[in-house]
Image (cartoon, rainbow, N blue to C red; front, side):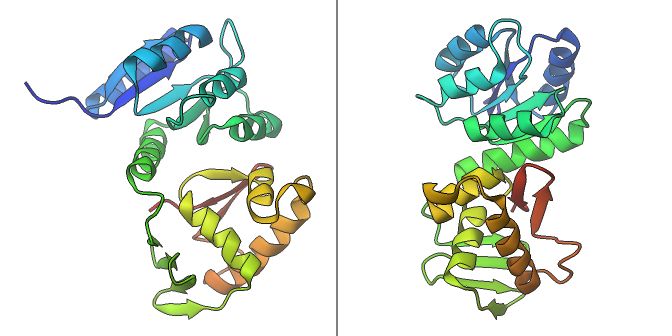
Length: 229
């Protein structure tokens, strides 16, 4: 008997989506469990102990964002939002509540698989990892050094703090609010201008073409994502 792959819990009340995910994820060797409501999903997390959760926001009993908040009181399992809601505010609220990523329906299975791999890989790596590599970009946390293609990049303390937090969450969407709170504290957590200015400066230093960035990707109206490792 062979061991099953990573455990994934799908919390979604659409039979077609559940069927698609069951077949697709199962073909990749994942161990799948399903829940069709928010309360059932929370109970399943405690019993099934998944390595990753795929969560729909539009559930029949409680909103998916509330499910995230309730889970984050005791569970740090990666959560990928899978939703038909395309509004930026919904995405931002879900991410600020504690979700790790989101995909809007309709979606491509290959894109979902890529997001799953990034989330699982990030979880498996130690948060104390001293050197983080994303393509040719290297962030040395111990030495507070950043290099691209072997060339050291001189950054201001604030620029370094931003690239550090992005690198520590490589592949994950960080909202403007999350970046502001981490880098500047609570004093200016509503002023997105700070992040835009410093991200622009960072791109000029680390991107070959700042207008077509490879490393720091903009999630329109939401925040930023450092490309996955």
